[in-house]
Image 1 (cartoon, rainbow, N blue to C red):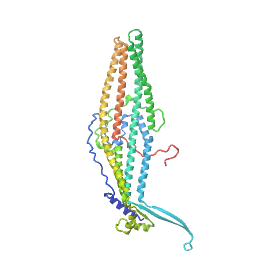
Image 2 (image 1 turned 180 degrees about the vertical axis):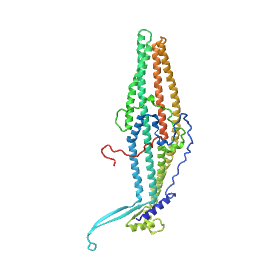
Image 3 (image 1 turned 30 degrees about the horizontal axis):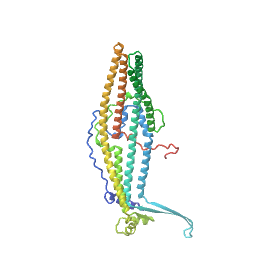
Length: 470
């Protein structure tokens, strides 16, 4: 087949792409994006430029957190599986793209005639089976599917970043919680022992002793649960890093984590267009639209060209000249006459497009709602944390005053120990409140699509079974 004829065919195909001859033209749904989010975070200070590439976790200034996320992005099994899906989708796309190129069947033989002498001969006959309408739409479908798979990989990366950050913050929070819980148990034990002595002396009732015993037992029972949670948190992080169970190195202490000034300011709603699940949903919609064309194209003939170069070229030259002998005699023969199942396939494709359309709208609406919820949650949790810290500061001051009064003989030991218990319990509330606030920061960046394109290389790791990828 001559190159110029194939080029002419491709040019004709491109010209026909814009018409509705073989399926609907894709039109982006109108979602009436709001100019801004109803909920405003007055504590937001960080610039929001290029959120997909923003390594927002570095704002916490914890080298260990940075190292964990870098390692997870390189080694996480789910990311590698998603990259494998990209390789497969890319192969499908190339298969469709290369379908324009004819195949060739080869034959060889031994010639021993007296006229030409002895020797081997070789011949190659090109074969081309062409449905131009189906080819174009199939390529559009494969391209959209490929882009959807790439967006799915970005969604996985975004999730891995969020899970790693949340897991690390949770681990640090649990370390601090264990420390505070042990201090609470120590103070409750001292209070209980003093109460038992006073009960024997007739100064305390049995009810008071039992009340202190109950508080002590309840607090003590929390320690093994916290220790088990620490092991579970470490193992969860190790799975994200593609590692077996073991310890996780810590960086900053929980109290050293700065959770203020991390939220981006002036966030336009258009940033959600870069959110990978939104991109994936739109590409799926585009694929569904193209698939209608694939089904519709079955009404058109499939042209089979085979023979020598000259024969194929001649047939191709008259392919789209209606009324030619080739069109009438060859094309019509391959046309699917009275194939009513095609109508069912078209209806199926349209139903899939309908579902993909409303799935896309739901994805966009959910993205808007999630970010607005996150902005509100972060502001309210930060305000709540500030109140809890003020309460903890008050309990510390009360304990210091009680300690001074106890030294001067103005306060009893039970009063001093009760102030210590109150301070311990207040510290635990602050710990939980700060952990919740950190969680809202991570959730907001995930819903904004922050950081998924950071060091985003679609490189494959070697197989762990001794076989190299290449």
